[in-house]
Length: 192
Ligand code: F6P
Image (cartoon, rainbow, N blue to C red; front, side, top):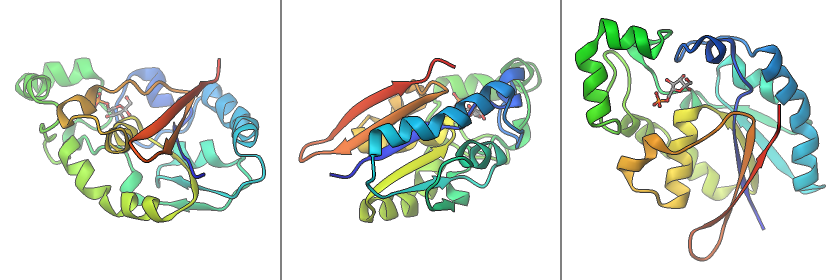
């Protein structure tokens, strides 16, 4: 029986500073998660084959680096592009682009950052990833909050408007096992 495992990257320096987007390295705490992940995955997967997919951003590649499995990087797994707001905190966005901040609050699924993307855009660019996932055995995807929300929402049949609010904590491995009707879900938080 195959499973899809989802995890955000270990805590990044941008996470620590409350900045969105960017391509920052992982923090010491994030490194601890990266080091603890192989044992958690092994416990779950045993000797079954598994592939690891990451985005092209260094925080996902660093989080995956101790995992002894074949790896693939996908540009389509990069975090939602926040355009002109990339690298800012939510407070800075609210101050500099108050109308945008409000528009996003009103319709988070459809709101597209200036020069960037919406959740709807992300779902479109994830199509090839989802098609490939349907053909594969066990896959562990290490990527980003918005991307995991979209993948999780797709497999769990969550209504679009709710997707941008799905709770995807850091340092938690999510296991989805497709069944005849919907997916079975398990979550493994690591206390790091
Ligand atoms: O803060 C981490 C992060 O992954 C950002 O890089 C990204 O812009 C954001 O979360 C997505 O979450 P939300 O859509 O709730 O702003």
